[in-house]
Length: 345
Image 1 (tube, helix red, strand yellow):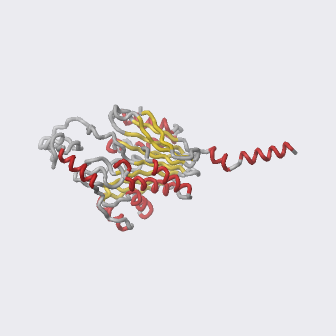
Image 2 (image 1 turned 45 degrees about the horizontal axis):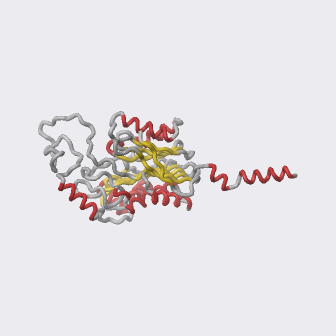
Image 3 (image 1 turned 30 degrees about the horizontal axis):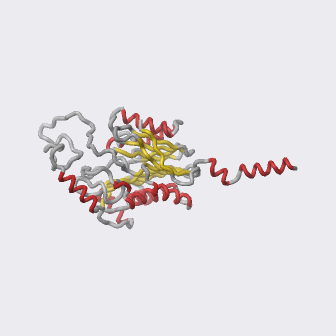
């Protein structure tokens, strides 16, 4: 009898909710940079019964409102005309549906508009003024995204002869003068494929990955892009597979950094595919960074990765001014969000 009682107590302990909860790292919230409030908001959404999509949208929206590091949301990164425009995307790894907006103008909640594209259209990406009109039809308020800070940034840039900028092989000489620019009558290619601006190493996009306790995945991004970009420029953030990617059969990933370079390599998609073949998330992230490094050794970028079992990792490209990458983690084995750091390779 005593042995039977002991066995029953052992089984009860083994199956207790606390022990089961601590044995799995799921659910998981992972996001780029130490944007803690975004992590907390996403986690609370999951805890209250929200879906992975709800968590991603809520988390990214916090950064939009808080203007995380001036590189997400309104009032930051004015383009060469002084206007702040937004890019965002959200992806459902269960259905493979995506909603995204690029060059969104005069609408603050870019990730919210992206969610509406996913839910209320059969499209994937809307851009520019047309995206703004769509947002208005969905009930979003049209308002100025400029602030005193963004106007001052633009004024200072003009006073520095529009340096840095993203033009090349034009007249007048873009490295010395403001535009407007035109191609020379006899264009002489300089052979360059990448231009250092001296302003590439700031925080940028929030990229977020969420893995539900049942293994369902979602990912998303939100950004106002790079300062003084050419009007109309769209980077990697709203492009599925570049800015972020999610697939319930493998995992999810998100990228941050120089969007013009990252966009050419679809790093988030590639990382998920590496995980599909059995690579652990850290190795998957490192392989993506190494692949880009072969072509652009001085690129600024990082990737976060998580598989459907809740394992996660990150990697970044090492530069003299960028040797470590910080990201946020919150899972069932932690009682609060944790900032983790990875040495760049």
